[in-house]
Length: 462
Image: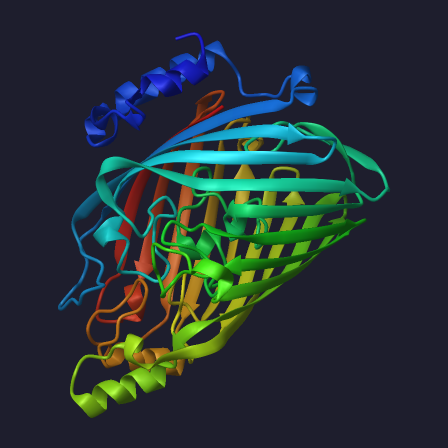
């Protein structure tokens, strides 16, 4: 095939990817052969024409397969991680853009998804695959993940050129500017961004590595919501604010109509240069407003009735607050350090993301240019996730979180995750990643684990 866009289209039948391509790991080689052929025929770099075009078309396909090792599991509950299992996910996305005047643009991201995370995306607060949604299906299905309008208003200062890429037009823009985004999007498109640990299609996979674990950001079960974000760039500073819709109930597939339940987010970012190496520090604070249960009330209600611990019985309109710090720092031209610290209200049930009350993350990312393989990259990260006392008592009483719940928790401990990956780029636009994670005390349970999770990820992007 001479056109990478035709290569993407060829994998679709009546608008859905061929099941032969995505349901059987043995067909991965066929998929990669098509991708390599397309990438050899056409690169992914922006051309000069992109700067004047009123339209943009990009796309991506990602196949991920994970397997868990044998590990100690003397008992299990509804939300437990299982040993000796393998699962796969596939997604294909188009990124279609149209300019709207000098600074306006509209983007739409239709997507086809298929597959399951380990245990249907359950069993660890730091879940091992950011490519696995909370909704798993055997057959490919269609979702409209993003549909948003963005307006950029120049406020003076120097100018800089940005390249054409996913959801971004090539353009010259002012370093001092106001950016307004409204529509359906992911909170992670704007907030808690880290260039070394934020993209499960290209770098790390674990949820508590690619995002701050306690950042209970507004989202449906696929990780998207509707709302408004405003960003003010002024020299080395950026101030961001966002208002987003929560889902109807915790961990729901449906968003709350009318913003009756919503979330405010504020972020302050400072960029700097230290010894000719760039760095960034950002502080993010969120506050969710919605029908949520106090964990101690759920435990008390279950004890009084003799029934199961059910937070739905004691939900009332209240707030949940949290915050995080996010650091990027270059150490050499090819080596960088990244870190996150976060904490959230541990007395309230988690609403959208995962069951982490306090977390610490640090890691290293290295570019392949260090060993003369510029398309390659590698990284290593360590995440330390902890429970609040209220959430520990809730899980010990048999309560279920968004992702965790072994039915009991007699010996609680921190969930400790080590992840490392190597990302190999054989040709332009194609990447093959080998990933390993070790999860000690999955779901904060010292009686279970440690679990090893192995993954291979194939990714194509144009």
